[in-house]
Image (cartoon, rainbow, N blue to C red; front, side, top):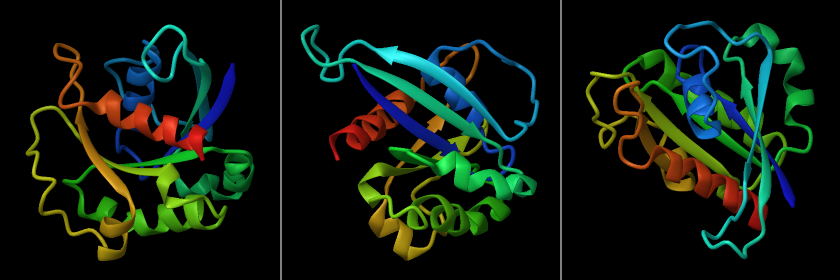
Length: 176
């Protein structure tokens, strides 16, 4: 069985833990906000990467990294041996849009991770506007990174393909 380490990074209160819980099917902390202290590691297995029962399986480690920059001294240790990075942000907060380049620089460029192993995810809080077409992202990042958007509620846990974007990033990380 293959093993993949995928980092979920981005500004505070962007929804990293919500997405990590959703993808790993964890119920930890559902319904309440509690800032991640340093990092939280969730493990799960995907029996087959290609959808049929005969494919190679994978054990994933999702590293739900705190968005608090007071943990910046820990970032090199978190990045060690990672296969992919998912940068998550709340598109309705202008401060998050300004921070994306910093997260990309620190977690993708500094470890020379190919852009194909990075995903940019606009995570919408339930009930918010979903305009991801007109985000004022750096043109550099728009052209280089795959991007997606998610919205996860407790009553309706899936909106247009959040899991598909995340799993695709993980599969790309393994195939590089």
